[in-house]
Length: 234
Image 1 (cartoon, helix red, strand yellow):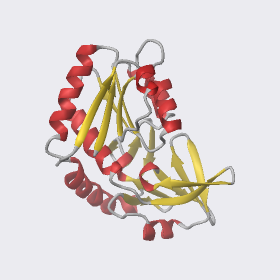
Image 2: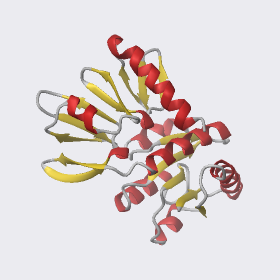
Image 3: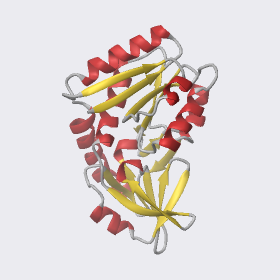
């Protein structure tokens, strides 16, 4: 069962977002639940984990950034979607590995896109052993935003941390799920699920961007369009 939580200190916003999420999920999943909370403290007081978490950034007491950080420390596979009218706080949310941002007042198309992409992440369960400060961690493919290669090893971007593994980018291409990962440069492979925008040969991961090489441009655009149609526009 797909489990979704929504946290907002305003009853009207909570009800509105729940209605949109329910409307979007109905044709996508036969089994789901949506729980609502009016504060980060209320969410954290119970021990249930959620697949997808919608968080309002601006809340009294424990705000959305602190709540998201606490949830991800407890349940690192939770997919966090931040909701706010305060766009100047997006950068803060990036460092807790926010997957998407939706604006207030709510726009249904934004929520639809975020949920479709998040559900694809939920259903990607394969993992790989990576190292951070020489300590091994089992990391889900769905957590990896992009991979950058160096001589003899690669770095894997996960939130604000770079993990490491002695592996070539060719081996990454050969072993990672090809429907979600794409080579965009001799030095980069990106996770299509984490791309928030693609404009003029540049892929964006919230406030970070990577340029697609001219040689890879046509192939990447074809793959990105195919992914967009198959997984985001259902």
